[in-house]
Length: 536
Ligand SMILES: [Zn+2]
Image 1 (cartoon, rainbow, N blue to C red):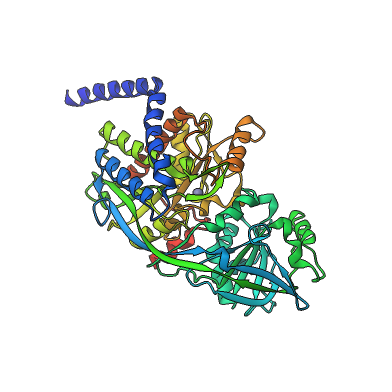
Image 2: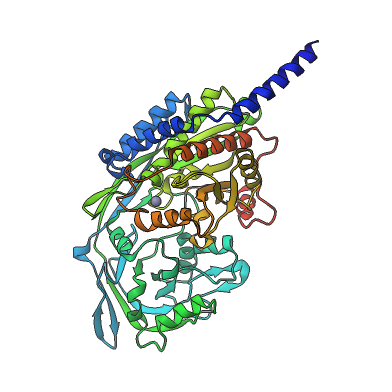
C-alpha cells in the first residue's frame, strides 16, 4: 500500500511538475525584481562602484544585505566580507612624455592621440631603449612557437600586434595571449618594456575609449597568489592608425604587417630603426576592498564539503573621462546585471525549498576591472575549506533581446558543457559555442581565476544568429556602451529574458550541485593541465 501510495503521489507530482513547466512563471514580475537590484547598484549615487571607493562600499553593503535576506550564510572572513589590500598607481600626464629617437632626432609621440602609457607599482620612471618588432610576441612552448626566437631582445622594448597566428587553436592562443602569460615569457627573455598595437579588425572599442582609459587607476593585490607574473618596466599601447611612425626607416611598414595578419601569413620579425624614450609620472596610494560571499550549505553529509561557486563582479570603472557630459561609468550590464542575478538565483532556490547536495557559494567579487583581482585573491585564499568543483560566472551576459540562444564560453572544455546543454534543452533555449573566439572571452573574466586553479568553469552571453537584428543590437552595444558611461539604467534591456536566464542558471547550479560526479575537464581540453598541476 505504502509503495502504491508513493507511486500515485509520484505521478501526481510529475503531473504537477509538468503543469508548472507548461504554465510559465511570471517572467515579467521576476524580471522587474532582478532589475530593481540593477537600478540600485548602477545608480549614479554609487558612482560606478570603483574598487576601493565609497560607492563600491555601498554596493558591498547592499549585496551582504541581500544575501542575508535570501537566507545565505555569511561565508567571508568578516561576516559576508573577504577584505583585501591593493596598491594603487595613477598616471600623471603632466610628468609624462613619450618619444621616438631616430638618427638622433627626437619625434614626440602624443599621449592620448598616438599612444598611452601604462602604469604599475614596479614601472620605471624613465626608460630609453632600442625597439624590436616581434610579430605577435607569443611564446607557446607546447607548439614550439616562439616569436622571440633568434632575436636580441634583452634590455630592449618589444613591439607586437595583438592576436596570434590563425592556425593556432583558440584556447591555447587565448591562454598565451593573456597579458600575464605574455609578460612571463617576455620578462624571462629580459625584455624591459612592450608596445602593443591592437589589430584594428579585432577592436572592441574605438581608440578614443582606450585613450580615455589611461586615467583609470591601476591596482595590484598586495598579496597576490603564488606564480603571479612580474610586471614590466614599461608598457605602451599604440594607436594602430598612427603605428606607421614606429616602423619608419626599418625597411618594413605597419601596412605590410597588417596585410600579413589579415592574409594569415607568418609575420616578419625585425629590429626597428627607433629608440623609445618614456618618462612616466605616477602617484601611489593604497586601498582596501572586499569580495562578498554567501553560502547555501549542501544537504548531503559528504558532498556538502564540495562547493559550486556562482560568481559575478561587483566593481566597475568608477568616475572617469566624460562622454557626452556623463562622467559616471555605472556598469549596469557590466556587471550589476550579474550581481542582481546572484541575488535572484539565491532567492529562487530558497523560495523553492530545495536543498542541493553540494554547497553553493554565491560570490560577488571586487577588482575584476583591474585584472580579475578579487577572484584571483579568492582562488588563492578561499574562504571555504573543501574543494571548489565548479565556477559558473556571470559577467555582462547582455539580456538585450529575447533568450532564444545562449552562447556558452567553455562549452566544449568540461562536463559543465553537457550540463548547460541539458538545462537549456529543457527550457527550449539553443546553446551556441563562442562565436568570437578571437575576443578571448573565456579567459577575460573571473572564471579564469578558477580555471587556473583547475576548476571547470563556464561563462555566458545571450546568443543570436549572425545577420539578424539581434546581432546588430549586440554589436552596437559593444561599440556604444561597453565600458562607457552609457552602460547605465537608461538603456533598453529585456527584463523577462533576464529572468529566464536566471532560471537557467539556477537549474544549472542545482544540477551541478546534485550530480553524482563532480564536473571534470574533457580529456582533450587545453585547460585540463591546470587541474593536473594543482593536484600535484
Ligand atoms: Zn568590464
